[in-house]
Every structure is written in structure tokens, then in C-alpha cells.
Image (cartoon, rainbow, N blue to C red; front, side):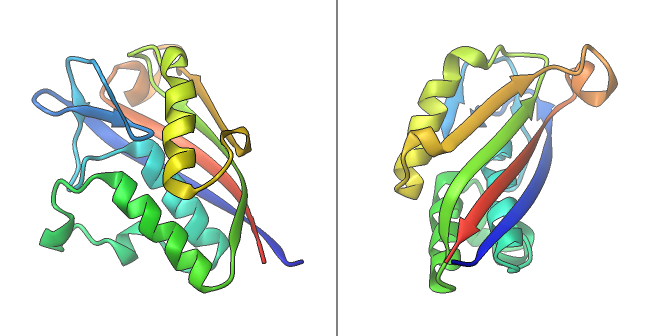
Length: 158
């Protein structure tokens, strides 16, 4: 069995007038993430990690922000397509480990639903998806609540 590891990182600015989507779940918050799609920072980092592990470039290559088809698109669609793309090369996902960096809202209560939602999209066991949340102790753009970032690591094999 051939195994590969991938790493993804994404960041989006928090702005008024947008819904906040993280991990395929809409969260109540006074701000949302700015982006061409729904700006789901967790899904984008996972897509980049999966594509990187399969040596298939990145999310912007496959789903460019210059393409009107992806304007305001639900990122779960991008994730499903990413899983299909790596499957076309013979890869299956082993596990995912992600860390969300945000001061607010508190994410811990939402993590079980995020894991379940992502597992359904990727046809995986939620036990193979780890999602953690942390703050940056009020430091940097995250600490000033200007944006949210995510780090994701994946294991794929064929």
C-alpha cells in the first residue's frame, strides 16, 4: 500500500454581512468569512491537504475564483469533488486532522456536527476526522478577530 501525507492551510477575513460557514455548518455570529465561495475555511484547508497529498496542486487550481460557476458555491460541493479527483488517481482517505484558529465564536460545541457533516460528504467514518479549535490568545489577525485560519493534515493511500 502506498501512503501519502498532505498539509493544507487556509485563511479568510471576517466581515459583516456574510454567513459564517465552518466545516459545512452554518454558525451564528455577527460576521462571516469573505470569499468567492461560501469561504468555508475548514473545508478549503482540507481540500488543499487532500490535493497536495495526491500531488494535484491546490484548490485554486481546480476551483478558481475567476470562474463564475464557483461564485457563492457551497464548499461541501468542492470537497465532494476533491474526494472524487483523488479517487480518480486511486487514493482513499485514511484520516484527517485539522486545527481551527479563531477567537470567536466558541467552536467546541459545533465540532461533533462538523465531523458528522464532513464524514457524510466524504463517505467516511467520523472517527477518522479530528477537528480541534484554538485561539491565538488575542495575538495577530486572529486575535484581533479580523479572520479565521485552519491547518489540516491528511493521510491518503492506495
